[in-house]
Image (cartoon, rainbow, N blue to C red):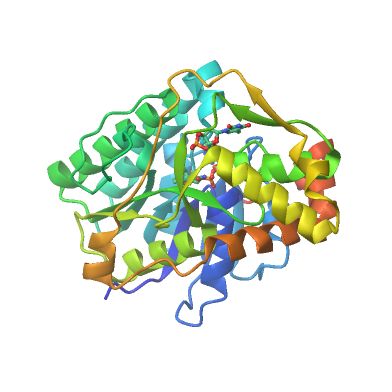
Length: 349
Ligand code: NAD
Ligand code: TYD
């Protein structure tokens, strides 16, 4: 079992990083401090961390590309483990502007690895995605030994970062682990991804844009399950190993949108047709992967970890969260969430 002292979390103001921080700080097994290094791109939102104990969460506004800053933080805060969430994460944005994906996801990961290279006592956990494996047909399933066949600039940049983690680990004898998760959902997700976009558009009576024929399949994982799986890997994962984290939960996009519509109608006490009529088929995403699915056998067998969420219950709770948090939505929609300097968090570097 790895001893977890102070953690450097990158991208902790984003969707999954913030869920991880909230969860770890609530875990009595963790007694350290989290240093949260985030560049505050459009995806960084400190509202996601409202209420976390500021004595145990040190927010640092900075870029993972700044190697000197990373090294200073690791030394000053006696970091034992880096958990690397920071990334450009949205496929559609990568199609329109791949450059920042290469910079942040590949060069940024190299900067972090170089900091560890000079400090080999630090363990490095890399958060990656099932999209590096490309697309499945109707059959088959991804495992840790599936070939890398990325199809989008986002997936290619994450694949590149995975290769760096492997190579730096082997060449420089670093302690690394890596995980590939399937599509995450849950509270605080930025409304550019499928599930929050559909929920918010339902609430505003806007069209629900389904790409292509809606027959693409994704495997959905609750963000808290993802955070728990990462924690398990940090504690028990073997250095040099890769673990895939799936939800065991495949849905066709169109079926999922119908389920969301049904749940929103139920929770709002309105007829399903009010929302169903908003479903609109739009031009397909270029290079749109047909299907992702993760086997998840290795993490179950070796680390005794399995997802716990029932998907429909998780979706209902997610919709309820958005319904209960209009201020969060409003601040995202108006851009007020970007006024993060006015919050109680000091910028320290
Ligand atoms: P997100 O886009 O919500 O958050 C990314 C965070 O990284 C933001 O806070 C942003 O400000 C920060 N960031 C971006 N560039 C940075 C830089 N150069 N330096 C420092 N911080 C920077 O992303 P997410 O959905 O929370 O995803 C987190 C990680 O999980 C990513 O590595 C992503 O590839 C991976 N992942 C995501 C999913 C998913 O479904 N969202 C699934 C599997 C894996
Ligand atoms: P997304 O949430 O962008 O995640 P990823 O591309 O990483 O899987 O999209 C999930 C699926 O939903 C994907 O097949 C694309 C589709 N999609 C739509 O049909 N409409 C939308 O508006 C969005 C954002 C996604």
